[in-house]
Image (cartoon, rainbow, N blue to C red):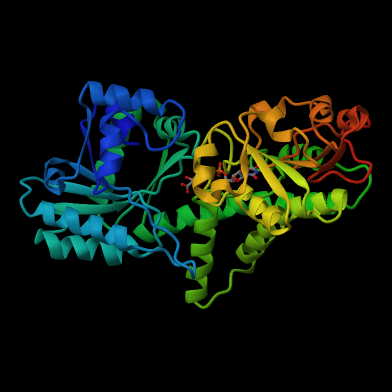
Length: 436
Ligand code: UGA
């Protein structure tokens, strides 16, 4: 978001306490992989529209302060607000010396009530300034996807702005209008709490949609001549359902969907309501990852001393992020069963080394990964894995058994090539191409 604002001519200063992060950014090194980010960062640094600092007083010069700190999950699912509180304190403190109005925008994902009951009072106490006159607070949740962060920042579907100060909402809307001009999306002006709950509802709905199709996939696996891909494309044509987020697989991961779902569950339980649908969405997701182990056992029996190849470590393609990745659960289960594991991923290997150390083997490419393996599990749908045909597995594996955890491969082609294929959502004799 920061480098996109800088790209559009705004002077953006990023404030953080992490010296290592600041040093990397100053050198033009993004701390994670994101398409086009490096170029945007380089441009911002070069034309000095984007600078970074650990000096909190720099905040007092800006017109708008975005709070973008993390809100990690605690063991009970409740979010840890300590970073939001310290950022609010810092903003409040810096506002003491400010000579002009500042709009404070909460971008971080927070529980309903946080902007009103935490951010506002903390800034009020620390700044000694007048709300509405010297500063205001808006809640403005973020909906960008990892792997599409730059694109989504520049092309948002909608903008949600919540506040108790109408003038503040207008100011923020005006800022976005200048940024997006003729591609300005719909703006929803609402309360703090609606904006905050919208963010959770959005992610919970996406997770539920995926768990729903995964539930249909599990039913399809028990019915001959079925294929979840065919069912997903058919129901996706119903305008009320829509085609997105209907890709069946080993489940959803990442730093957002799991965390936000658990926060929503915790939140609703604290309010005296058990959100059964959300709990079932989560439980269905837990079962999906387990499916990889079940398929492998169906094919090989006991997994002790078997060689298992894992294609894909990142929680989804176009990122190196392995937070809450399905691959981590699958690998841990395989190691627990006594299997030896080799892995391949175009971007996430360095992150995997930090998690698994020397407990698994890191292959340089697909061929090296599947060489001599008894079973291969496709976990992340990277384009290079999608291209593989049955023959590629037969050539290299000891026993060509493939678990298609993202429903990428053509069951007929794989069968013909001599691969024993287990695919999420494909019934015993299933192939969508039967009637073509
Ligand atoms: C998600 C939301 O999509 C963003 O709108 C939101 O801003 C972000 O969380 C956040 O809260 O910060 P992201 O975590 O980047 O974005 O990932 P998604 O693209 O939503 O994918 C999440 C998981 O669902 C991945 O593991 C993906 O493989 C899985 N998925 C997605 C499926 O299994 N099937 C699908 O059809 C779609």
